[in-house]
Length: 124
Image (cartoon, rainbow, N blue to C red; front, side, top):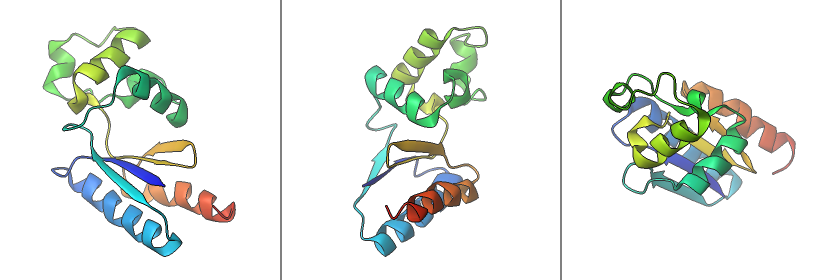
């Protein structure tokens, strides 16, 4: 299964969704499309996602969102940042594609090809 954490209002997220759908169809894989703002990730899910992304919490954040400034997150620690992501899903970088235990922020969407190619090379 491939999962995409998607924001339908975001053009880059829509582009990544098309690429992900094409790959899933070609490979005969199930695809879960999750509008993460309507169905936010829990703190526990965000911790797992952080490990899959292999990033610090700060790199998972959209620092240009109003909530970022309002919550004064510029100097926040990891735990505070992850909790902010749980409480304010609009702060999550997008889109995120999760496949075979790995995740990638697919912006620009062309970055997605590396994740999917690696999966193909491993014969899924």
